[in-house]
Amino acid sequence: MLIISYIVLCLLFIVYLYTLSVRIEGKIINVMVPYLIITVPTLYVFEGIFVYLSEVRKYTVEYLFFYTCYITYIASFVISYLYTQRKPIYNKSNTKNKPRYVFTSLLFTFLAFIIYLPVLMEFREYILSPRRIYELTRTGYGIYFYPSLMFSLVASICAFFTYKKSKLFCISIVLFNCILIFLHGNKGPIFSIFIAFILYLSYIENKKIKFMFLVKSFAVIAVIVTAFFAYTFTDG
Image 1 (cartoon, helix red, strand yellow):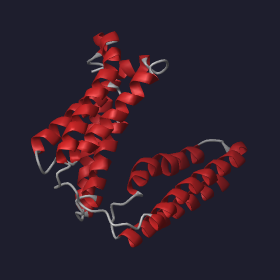
Image 2: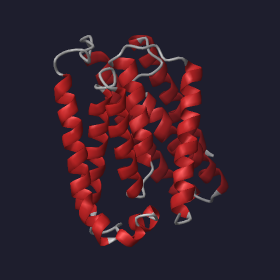
Image 3: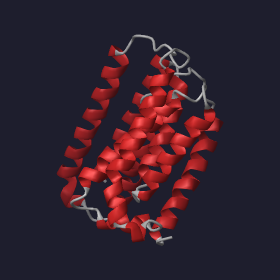
Image 4: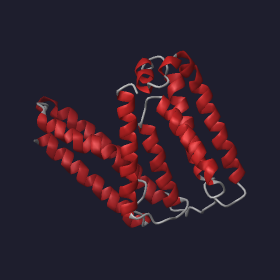
């Protein structure tokens, strides 16, 4: 029970950090949101259930050490961000820098595709079964896998800044990169793109995002990611 109690205590501290972020920044969509969405369910909710159902008492010291380190890490990041980044963020999405975002989004999309192309060519018979590609590239293919994912994410973020200029271009770039990420057999980065877009709306466009919009949006994304998982898990 000591482990579960400590996990609950850590979760309450995370909630406090989020409340602090909302109070200081005045935004419900803030720097803590990605952590809340991605890490809290796995690290605090499901892990707590696992501890409750499993016999892991002999690992009490290890669990306490791990969660202490993790809480120290996230607390250091959030507090240092909130109390050092006091400069206002100006909306530059309507400036002459837009052509740069068009170029960089195209460039990083091209790099993401080219870097991953050798893998697609080697396992072309599994193009419609991305999960199989993922299983076969777990070792020895990191030099293709991770840079390609990184460039796809960067390309999508750059495309957000072109949304007002050309919605078609922005949607096309993001959609292409989502498909490319899907071919990696990895669904997580698709969720990351959506979170990045929400943060873009909150910080760059200074839009006040309603809670119900957030809930509905995440529900849609959850359905899409689940569909991707079902498709890849059953090999199409």
